[in-house]
Length: 558
Ligand code: ATP
Ligand code: MG
Image (cartoon, rainbow, N blue to C red):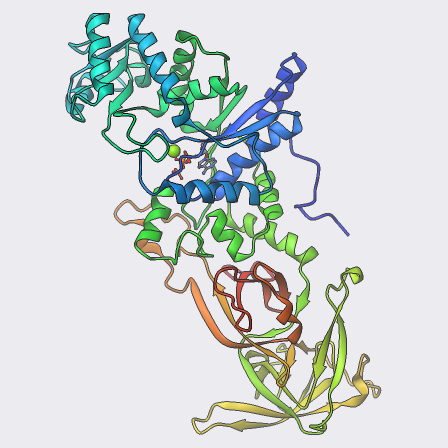
């Protein structure tokens, strides 16, 4: 068998691997990377790209990768996110070096370095209002102007910064800025803010701090403290790199990390922005961060995606410096490819229609043995009880049909998968005229073989024994957005494009009895229907819920 995309071991070359390989060849013996999430939401498929890149580079070059929470913004309810992020990174198959780290763990050091810059005349306290600061900053085409506070003495700056630190000044009074160059072509170098006053509680540092560093003042120095060699980030930070380097070269940092940028992952029919995903959750458009329609790792996990399929997807996408949109079909390909090779087969009837085999004795119980996987006999077999009363799928029957309908038609024959050939003789209708039952006969001579008189029976349909099947709930998912680019139309919001049909709940589906063994997260191929996973949140013993991970074929738009 061909290896699945998930099993392929040969990794595609990309520019970051080349940079690191060259550094290693030049004698930088230790590679250390980091994954630095802000704990203000759950991880999504875009983060998976960054996780796979950072951890796999460390693994490949015998180095280590840190997990660092970029928690410079004091915010509430972060503990839930901190726990969920760790769970998701581990689920993807990676382990960080040592304990998780926190940017907030470096607040003392960062404060000391801010004082260092003040003492060297490279930082000052600025009392311009936010609006004035904007006006002074200039534009892409015009240089900025020096703040009137720019030439405060070192002593005055030290005293004011100390007042800020002690919480003696109200929020918004002033900020600490780096003294770089108000005429720099790169706006990030026009005396950027290093510290703001925030009288806020922080989930790690409590009420200790009344001032908080900006991302730019914290990130590079945190990298340096941790001995990060290659600081991999997305392209929007490219313009911040000169500032990243300015701080490192103007401070007595213990190491000199280098920043490299790559393109972020964008997927069509999907939003990957924590702010927007948060909105979907808080406005209850979905049931939570782990709703199986969400592109979060917890949503994909609950939907039935395997970690290997997500890693394979990230390999397929590759790492480049050009922004583009990846077709969500590629993610679907990766999971289908993985599950085809490993998911045990089972039969489950989603829209049950009762079938009575009139020439099969009601007191008889037969068993058929079916393989769990058609190409993998080593996976074993399952027993399929066969009785007088069965269920087939309503959509597999027609009273009259065109030639190309290869299923059951009144007066004609079909094979029940893994069992006999049956003929539909009569329909039974309920009071409302709906077909409620089929009366069929079976050909006892077709057990495991074709009819002996040479009759050709083309169609094969799935079925379960009415007396033995399990009642299960099945949830079918469609794309959460109806358009390819839900964020594109600026006159609307992405919420206007939510697909009202993204979730279909089917109750009373009939599953073969072997599914009683399903435990949360067990995955199956329901023959002829697709890949399904027992829901990890709402499945109860005796009342299983299955999520459709993905259909058997790429039928989108067809
Ligand atoms: P969002 O825009 O969803 O809030 P973020 O970049 O603010 O994302 P962080 O928690 O700060 O989220 O990101 C942690 C790491 O993941 C960063 O290094 C970031 O560059 C990376 N990352 C985030 N989104 C993507 C993406 N779509 N593709 C690749 N990497 C991403
Ligand atoms: Mg961020």
